[in-house]
Image 1 (tube, rainbow, N blue to C red):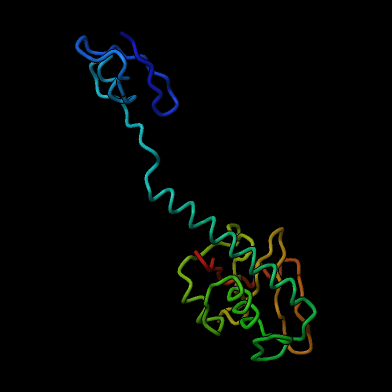
Image 2 (image 1 turned 180 degrees about the vertical axis):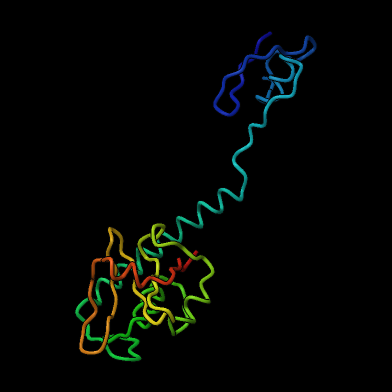
Length: 183
């Protein structure tokens, strides 16, 4: 007697033992049937390791958080710069970065140097993605939020306002590291 079994998306035909009841289907796994048919051990048909799945879901979760942080930063464009400003209504560069990521559910320290040290996931200039924090100058005294397509949002200096700027050669020459919060 032949029975039909579906395992992992493949339909298998398996011969039932001679003494088996005719109305009870035989369950055969893909690996077991391959072993019986060829006499060799079949390749594993298990799903990808949990680590790859957790890394993928962690990256997806970080990406969603980054989108929230960027959206929040966009809403602050036009607010005045104020030294030590943590909003709402006025900002300094690290206050804007901290508040944007706080809105996304990620707690960051207060100053640029503390943020850079605390966030373990470092990224390169070319590897930056929306939401990454870009640091500038030798002491990492300025930070901006990368928003993609070669732009960042930052609170530049006294007398200015929060703005979106193109990352020109000047910024690249002053670049001193980047981090990916929420990873």
